[in-house]
Image 1 (cartoon, rainbow, N blue to C red):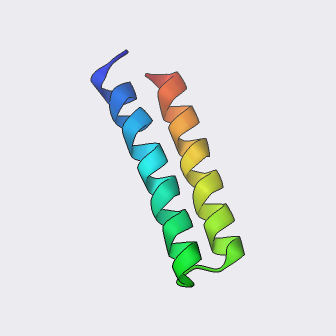
Image 2: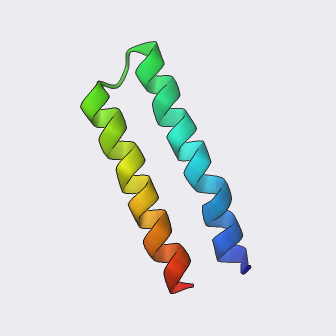
Image 3: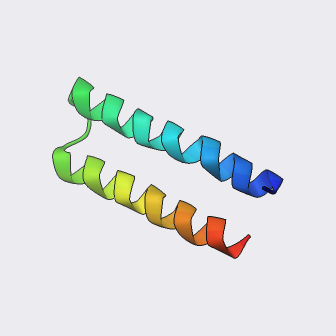
Length: 51
């Protein structure tokens, strides 16, 4: 695994956890949370495969 892939493996769960925490606090709506999670997963998947 390259350094970039390790970074993606660490950053993606952090982004997902942060968005879920914001949703539970009432800052984000459900659609915003879902779109943030899906976008981070899609970006991580594309960049992980490219590396």
